[in-house]
Length: 322
Image (cartoon, rainbow, N blue to C red; front, side, top):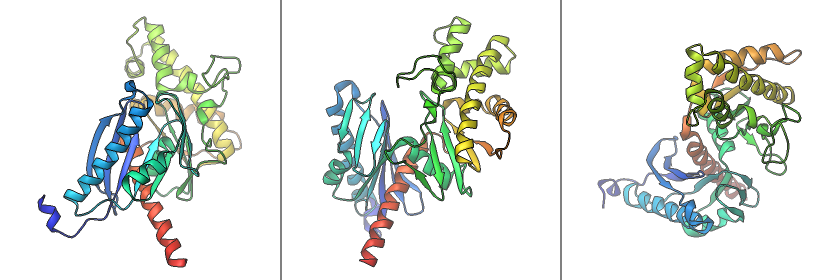
C-alpha cells in the first residue's frame, strides 16, 4: 500500500479523452488539479471491439490507481470521444476512425466502474475547459475552433457548451466557404475544413513545394521567411477561415473567438493575418476578441473532468431537493 493510503481519501473523478489513435486520462481533484495522468493507444488496428475493451480496461485501471494511491475510488467519470455523440442517450453514435456505431459507451463504463459517467464530444469538452479554465475565462459567450485534421467548434454560453438538438451544434468545418469547390467526405463541396484545417494546409503546401512530407508547420516557417509560394498557400487558408468565422460570428455574436489545434501553433503568423481578414469582412457585426487556445492537448481531458464534476453536482442537487 502506498503512503497516501493512510491519509484521508482524496475526492476525485476519472477523466478520459479518447482520440483516433491514443487515449489521454487523468484523475482530477475537486479544484481541477491533475492528481495522476496516463496515456495509452486505442489499439484501433485490432478493430472496434478491441478499442472498447481497451477503454473499459483503462478506466478500470484508473479506478484501481485511485483506490491504491488516493484512498478510495473515483466518485464519477467523464469520457469524451470523437465523431457523433448522442449525449442524452449516452451513445458514441459514429466515429469513422474507430469504427463504431451506436455504442452505449456511457452504460458500459458505468457498469464497469460502478459510478455515474458523463459522455461527450471531444471538441465540446475541450471548449468547456477553455471556457472555464483557459482562454475563454470571463467570457459569457465564446466560440472555440480547433484547426486540426478537420475543423469542429464548440459554442460556449454561460458556462456550458451547446450541443444542439441532435448533437451537431458547432460543426463550423462544414460551412461551405467555396461553393462547388473541393469535395468533402461529408457529401458537400467547398467545406471550410477542406481549405483551412491543418491537414488541408499540409496537403496544399506539400503540392506547392514538391515535398510530400512537408506539413502546415513547415508552411508557417516558410511564410515567416517570406517564401511567396508559402504566403500564397497560407493566405488562401486564412481567407477561407475568415469567411467561415464571419458566418459563425454573424449567427452567434460571441464575445471571444478561441482558435486552437495544430494550425494555431503558428502563433502570430496565423493570428495577425486572421484578425485582419476577419476585420475586413465584418460590417454591422461586433468584432470579437480573437485569441489562441490556452490548454493545448490537455483541453479534452480537463473537459472530461469538468463534465464528471458537473454530473455529481447535478446528482447531489437532485438528491437534496428530491
